[in-house]
Image 1 (cartoon, rainbow, N blue to C red):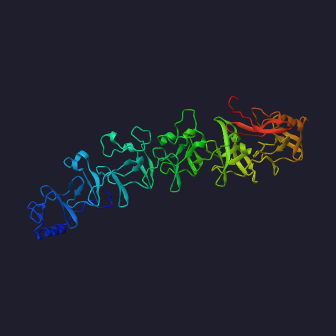
Image 2: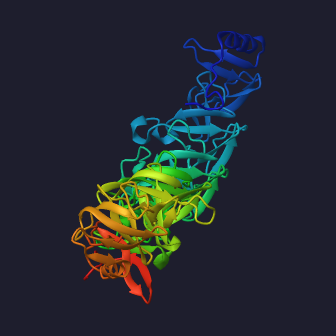
Image 3: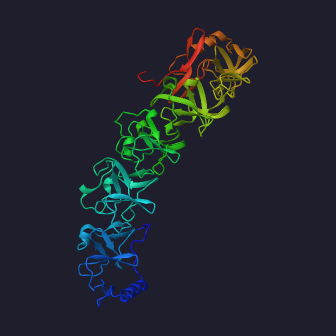
Length: 535
């Protein structure tokens, strides 16, 4: 036992000899009989019985037969050591007075004897800077302890001091038996009985007063925030903020009814069990079961326990994929833009952000890219994209002509093998395999369906196609080419195998972003919503 004071100090041989010299120097005093037992005689040479006698600043007790007592209880309140002196300001581990004849009956307990030699009972007492609790019989208490509605932890059987300003990983109170055989006699604190559904083990915080913290709100400890349930157990990992009064940490995620999901706004992340502090920063973790996001490990950004996620409602809702509605939001984190869905999972690759009205690209680390980006996966193939570098539209897919290259929401409009006619913003353009717009009127090998042949004469004015003339001599004017392209608007299937190609971007399980209709004289862009339920 790591006590702060010595338990029993046995008199040395020199001390006993000194005591013996004292005892034989006077008519009244101590004498040792032939059996080695000390007695005390008064000035009338009468043996003193059932009385305390002081010698050398210490008290000794004579029993009813006049024998000095050793290593035993006296009057159930005092204890004498092996050398007979009364214990004062000392610890002793022993059985209770009534159990001395049968030590197995009650077992040993620690007792503390004050400066008067009397055992401390029914109180708490600070000893050498640490606080201990004693019952009415003087037994030092240990393990879980409740007093005045407050919960404390008093260490193990051979420690006993009150935990203060510290974390402890402990069994719930109903599991600590304190050497009792009858479970009904267990001291249950914080309502964590054997039948309660709180976790069998957990982290507990004991305040400077020794009281276990057990409010269900967040608590700042050593500069970090933590969450607790009503049983005082620290909560960790994914937490449903509306259910923190549940009996155990395990009930805070993954226990909703089938088909029922939590809203991302109520979910919190409080690190792993080894830490438990409120999450801050980036975490690559399994998602919350209550969000139906537990099947994959994803990156999340946690800000004071709260998840960054697409929370803009309709303005973040773009289209549908095979799993339902798609929500994506571009959010600035630590000075950089990242993309998140409605569950808080970081997104990479090409993304459509409805609130910003355009396409963005995020690399494998989630960072938003600008400028020219090659090998952007789209429609099961790789394409070159260009994303704005200007403030205000930084990262937004470029639309239109740039340096004689034609782009549609960032996607460069390339021909596959030869040259291709593209419809863009009410006009027709001719591009090569690098997406460069042709400016010269001459013959080209055209790959568009219906007019795919070599040496097609193309009339171009100011980069726009005026007409094409086939080998048969048939001339198709620009307005007819435009009309053919616009007739494709709103089709469920869009391909580049048309007389004039209508540009598109394919994302989210085959849903397609392209021109969807002609409103007056203006072509309207949008999603075809091929995966829309009940479509």
